[in-house]
Image (tube, rainbow, N blue to C red; front, top):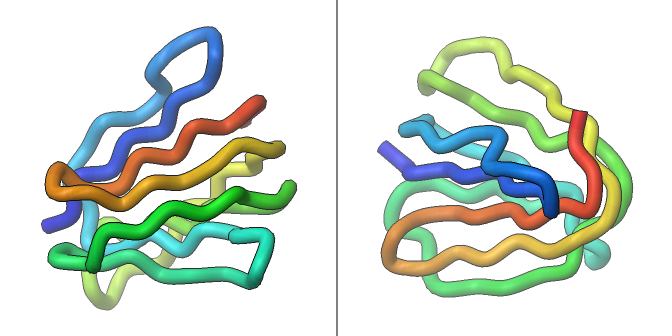
Length: 83
């Protein structure tokens, strides 16, 4: 499972284990699974798609601005606004 955190300047909104997250990067959407290589990208306004299971339907979370970082601990999305 992939550790996913969604953070805004106000608070930590999510911290959970998920199957995959698709992020609206400024260079295009990208999916992150467990074991993804280290990566950093700015993000554009749009929706993060959170897949809790391999075959499940995604949950969409609207975000505005910020950046995403994939590291040894998982994926962290730092959004200017989410919700």
